[in-house]
Length: 414
Image (cartoon, rainbow, N blue to C red; front, side, top):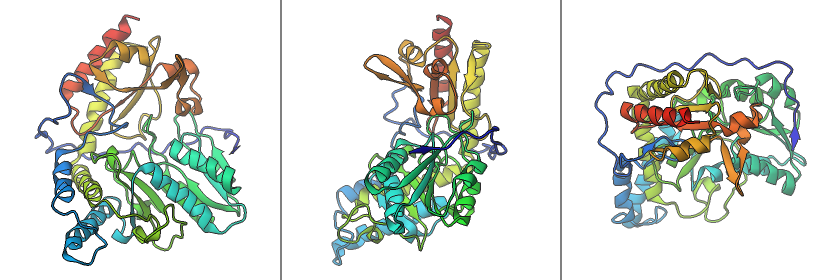
């Protein structure tokens, strides 16, 4: 891949995201059967617990309504109607039209359909693809495969110290052969929200398609594909309380893609194979519940808990807690911090009552710093000291107090 040089000056961060008040959210949900209370779950960015209402909605389609939605007889009518309804619900969450929703089995598959589909569908002899350094591996690896197998030219743009892409860097990288720009809505580690609307406008003005992986953003912040101006957008079920194995790709009407799975013509011919009505219903129900949460101000409730967690840690460990990523332009549920002198994996090992993620991975006993934090210019020490604490629908103020207290006590011992 071509790695574009870093911009000479730091990019401008957009104004902080503002959320409506959290009034009316005092009535909490019943306890989740999978969250025992013995371990505080702060890893919602890795996966979310399946909402019992989602499981209830999908159950009849694993039992009673078993028919093939493509069948013309009565056994296919119910599944067909349920599939259409689920498509409407997913479309409503992101401001799309139902026919523009293509169901897939994962976010990685949706990203591949977007990247591979756009490149192979372009008809260009040597198409150019642009992405950025902190993108999810599902996009970065798809780009590498396109380069290796199809001769695509790939440019990976740098990010600044907060993980944000400078629109000027994208403008400079676009050329006549650029067919696709792929930039995520929100980073899975820091929660950084990219200026998608501005980036998409630049790409489309240059005649390129714009794909946005919104796996972490969908359901957590408002998204509207028309306002954003994107051509392709990925939504992932297990990031918003649906089961793993269900996702969708928004494909703007008129966009030409090469299919990722060939066969019987399901999903507009872009993803053949008999649809799982149960999983589609789960995704649709999760999308409806997420839309309800957004309307009721759930982001404000979660952001308040996130900020309390940060404040409690900082107060208990004065001068030792560093925020990684932007303070304002980020997801309401995500807190990525480094505690000076305390490696993240050691802190979590010392606090078994907390389930969270670190800023490093272990390979043969050696800690490898996060590629995301490294791309932001953070040194190996700070990356290894990083913790990603991500909150969600079932996070309570007691969870936050418990986590902050346990982490602070463990860090104080180091």
